[in-house]
Image (cartoon, rainbow, N blue to C red; front, top):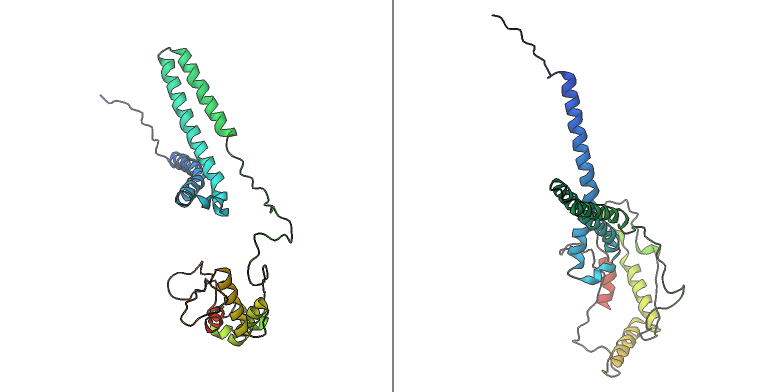
Length: 255
């Protein structure tokens, strides 16, 4: 006997297209939520790695920017976890006909969800305004002439335009003689003396007097440390990220 059977072919191009579209939508939806939480997670790790070893870093601008995002991530994480646990327990108690406990869990879940939404810290950054007004000196004036600061500018010190092949600190882009003159002017103006020797002598004598060493200048054999800005320096080679050029250090060493 011949049996009649009806077969339905479901593997059609339209079905495959709909399946692929559904998988793509699901993938995008999942990644969307991951992308929303990823910046907060990275901010939290960054904050902990930097601030825990040295709490004073919490005042750094980068940490002040990361802190609200990290806090928002924690609030959202605990809110979602708390709501999920509460609603799962509510479902369990409903199946057991323990309605009071179920209602309590539902209330806790809703309350946690609401707190998660309204409890996220405000991440709006207010414009920073200094506590002191303009032209208001900060700290205690010190030095041979307390509070005196010298500033020297000479465009002829460098010929670098930003587009040359060599670095800005290269000798071909810096006029050492002009830099030497600028350093000399700065030291002489700071000490109020007519030449470099008298200027350095006055500065050293003031330092020794203020540290209880008497009215004496630099003595042969004494070591002097010069602190330069090396914040971006790594290794032993000069690179484009250096904060100070060798030409500026050189006249200080020769003085």
